[in-house]
Image (tube, helix red, strand yellow):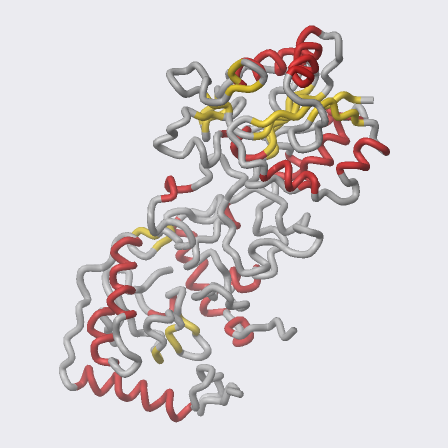
Length: 320
Length: 120
């Protein structure tokens, strides 16, 4: 059995909602089939007030072994570094987070806010928010760059806005079944099993990307969303087109540009007007090119692809 | 229901337009330039903000404002600049339909033409 405690800081509960939609395994399966004992979770816990505080204190003292501490939402430091804007069980949440992270075998940050600050930490970051071990791309965060939990791992970051339920359940199952030590993390502490490939990997629009045919308006099924509508699929590490949402689809399959929500910079360009759903260009060339491609190579590739483009690439090939 | 028709050269024409209509529009564009039409080739919209402003101007035009569309977009019948930028490599260009698919323009185009809404 693995004891799990889940708390929320500066959060919208989106990751909890996503987690509760998990299937195979479901949140219930985690308890009945995988031996996860949920000590408390904001949307599931029955305890209130002092009862919750007692659970937290027992985890910190070691009276209850805390195997997995899950945190959702930012660590709020305002005002003036006190964290008083986000109080929980009688003290700033940031204090609870620090003590619980020290007590936990594994610490798992779920969603962009907990991993690197996400939307709340967007400039001017009025709540002085940060993630557990990162603030955007900068390592450090609330726990410091050198933090490792008792099991010897840094915070396991599962980003996303929200994170896909399968990413969450599979990591929790891995830890609960004693395979936490097998987790390989990338430079941003994301499990490589999910975050080595790109959002574009498996996208149904890949042929249009290859032949440089652009979607020019929302709702079009032909074309690639990267060239004009700001899709970040070629630069974003996520398995959104390998592990489908609701087992059905993904943003890009449904015609919605990827917003790059598993990357530390999300939301990109600080949400400045005109930067969302519009590919940012300099002199007609995208500012952000597909990962690993330089400008010269991109221009050569485009010329070759346009020359080779077949007629069907200009049509809507989905006839349903 | 609209259907694609075949151009004289066998390529698909733009949806909803017959090959003749498309050829006629193309001819109109060429005639305007032969008549001395001057378009606003400069400044090139360096950033998206400037690009968006041009799109806003184009959206205010009616579908029949061909001349004004060409002027605002800085349309040319030759490649542009040191890099020889041309429609052929532009993201909005449909090479088989020989068509500019940017909704605000939505005009026939030739591979060697260019306008300042070019993007790759």
